[in-house]
Length: 539
Ligand SMILES: Nc1nc2c(c(=O)[nH]1)N[C@H]1C(S)=C(S)[C@@H](COP(=O)(O)O)O[C@H]1N2
Ligand SMILES: [Mo]
Image 1 (tube, rainbow, N blue to C red):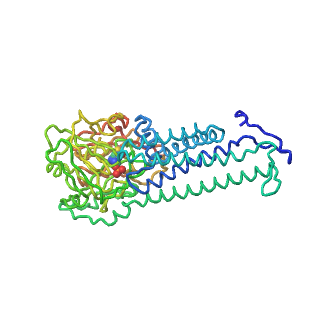
Image 2 (cartoon, rainbow, N blue to C red):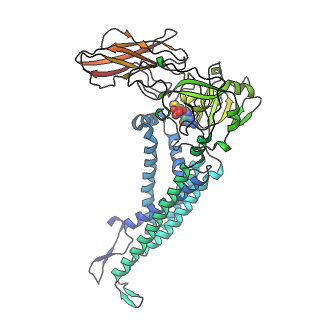
Image 3 (cartoon, helix red, strand yellow):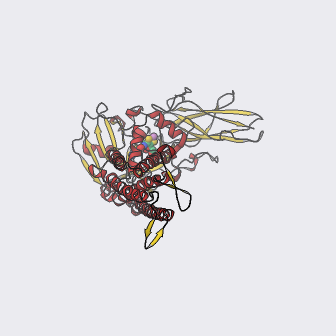
């Protein structure tokens, strides 16, 4: 504060110093509350209409889009799914610092500059809202309103803050009473704090209502009312023998609440299925548009399939298996009539995410437009009202959630979301195996029989053999759970009695072509990790 030249004058009544300049804390309060009020008004708008989104979220989205792949990779590795919380928190912290500086400037006679700075922030928010998943020019409204509200509050609050400055010797007469300078100042400070508290409480209330409205959005209520159609082609029952019966191994079917979630969405899109539609566009002879009811009325198939994320490290858990219900993608596209120049099927999400895979994958495999997962309409997290599932390829090139368009295109004309960010355009899931039991670092009882067990997958080629090696011993063939389909993972186990000491256990899988999983270590980028999973235990 001394660096800003604050001056103090002795109060003749009390002999204590009196600020002749608005104190810094008051400037910070002005700035923070103006920002809070502005953002709260935008949150309210975002809760009122689904075309409007929170500026904090749209700015965060742009950051997600702009950070280089290695940084994002690191963020996913370090923070897991809370990477989004971290990003939002950072955005808010930066905003709070900027707002404080602007607030201090506003109370120190640089009000025009401060209002101009608010306008710049509002413009940045508006620009960001025109990015990915934008609903057109109306999308800028929350940012513009936030800017106007913030600027208004800044003017209001900084006036009150300035009223706290009492000129030396300004003791005067109020209501026929002689009032000391100190008393005058205390009164103006009370009034400032009163207005500030009012603005703070109102902002939290308005913002809270906005957030609440956003959460209440149609989908939570709506998806419960959906009556799922019966499949014309049900999935074969899952025999108990797919499981090797070892506790701690990932269950054959992953319960939906435990299913991994990976996407670029900072807030999960809440799609209202009553005004949602799915269009088939691009290089087709007959573009189609289906409502949610149209989609549910199509012949449905039900399939169990494993999906995996390209960011899944060796031994990682970004993989899961579910029972999917949906219509065949090949049938739907045949109705639209794929033109011969098309070589890529692109899924487009309501939030602007895109993922593309070769038309050549429409080779009879069960690629589906999915509406339900594990017997229930898709949850918002996993793509309600509809998503794509294409067996055999990683999610980032195929599994578009919150699907709104299927566009037939060409690889030399269009790149899906992750491709310009350093990931391969084509990405079949690599053969992998994972040890679930024992966990790395486990302490086992030497001499007592236990099991080594886990899962393995070789999409569309089927796992036919899993081998385990303890320390430098021979590779031993594990017992396999029943094979369900070549699009699902397979459990395996091996009985083992540990000897005293430290041990390293490795696993590798072999597919039906006789190809054994490579031990070459590859990073997840650009097209999936390789290497043998190993765990270290002691007994
Ligand atoms: N709209 C949208 N769909 C998306 C993504 C995304 O970021 N946005 N991520 C994809 C990726 S990278 C994966 S691995 C799968 C994950 O699906 P899940 O979250 O249901 O497990 O969704 C895919 N679909
Ligand atoms: Mo992914």
